Length: 477
Ligand SMILES: [Zn+2]
Image (tube, rainbow, N blue to C red; front, side, top):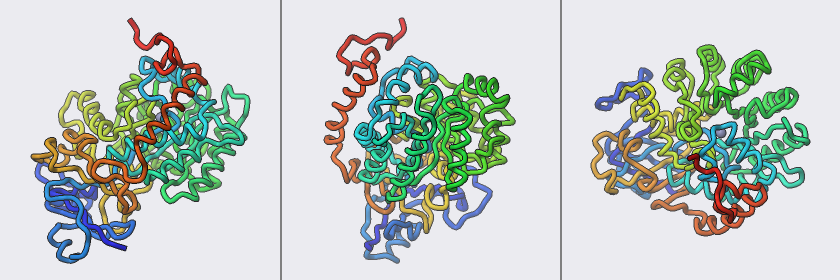
């Protein structure tokens, strides 16, 4: 298979530091791959990274390799989006006047029963295109709709990601509280998704548990059992809002973290989304059990949920990644916005410009996310042997004409418009700023009538201009 040499004025590998970068404190653990390489390149052979080094060295050693990227570009690992919901793919920019529990009741609950496979496919296509445009190569997703017996929706997500060439870690996180169907059809859909991901080149499987309040004790235990028996990881929302902690204490006598630990959930790899309201004991439990955290700064801002204690978690060694969260709660799927907002929120919380550096945010967006998903042996940094998930930022763009510090350039300066190429598994899923395998105009045309249908079926016309009636309640006086 042909080799490709991906060139950049800077190659930010995401690997532990061994060569110091001006103004950036060095990591303590040495690595053969430096964190940042000036005039560097990444050699891709098939679906793997074969070598990382200076462009001159790699060019001389591999004269027949095809060169992409240029002398001013910035090359980074693919970004790892640690939390999202493709099930919300057709309801962006709606309902942002609500806090979480109101939003779940007014917007998400009515959509859940009518989220069919064709809508899942169309919504995933729209959101996946946006993720690729912002440099995401892996998306950890939880599909949260109700199961529709005989017509499972989640294979629509697998299909769309396969067609786009975007890596997915997919879970199904419906619940059975206040539902007349019980846990059985939910577990059936889990099996369907597990089979669909097993047949996919790009997607893998986790068990989803949306949040404790949606599960009866029986369903909670069955889901943990499914994960333990099958050797699967779990993807769950934990302590997104304070109400959740109170309700859990009233029901179980423990926080959700404490209850999860006591019921054996942490015996398998767990990624906990949000974790805004985790106290000292909760954080300690995460550290003891190696629980990963998905930090969702934009969604936490839109729903006014709070600011997660990222610095405290990281200080304990808890792996923290960044998530865009669902298209109905973020509402953008632009990962670069989320990474920048992570740094801004930390600085605003502490009123310190040093609270989170651009480099720390970058590391959370890449290797930190991979660690939180326990996939850091395969993805998250540009190191030989790992999967070739690579992003090239356009160094000839006005925004990146002068790169004084490559981490600040990526995190604070660059937007999706500066993302030029995205490789997933050694193949270009985005080239010269556009997806290579699907037609975005077709994806838009397919999604529009389905979104309109969804608004009608879910009775959302008071919240949506697509319903044809005058809007009510979208803004408070
Ligand atoms: Zn979420």
